[in-house]
Length: 102
Image (tube, rainbow, N blue to C red; front, side):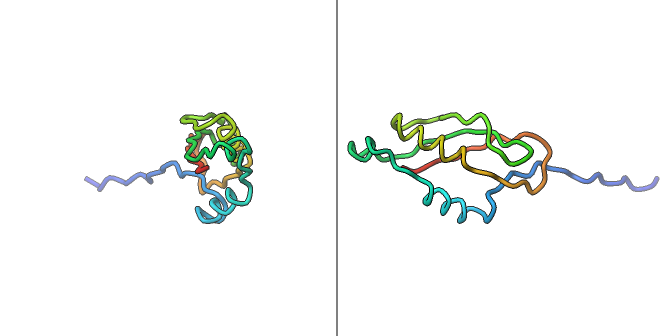
């Protein structure tokens, strides 16, 4: 009996920001506009944002999963909306999470 052929395993590759995590942190730092009302009230913390990445690396269906303060939530959504990700390999829609520290 001939040995069974092994099938190639194909796993979904997560998209990544061009330049990796360090470049993503630099992008967020350079683009972040801290809301004035949050500054005045000394609001600090994190906003968890969920999103979907389309096959062109665009971000869609952005939503706040865990908010902090209305204007901080809006800024986190704005920042995530500016992202463009690159696919290592693409085999479908990916849901991602970003935590923005404000």
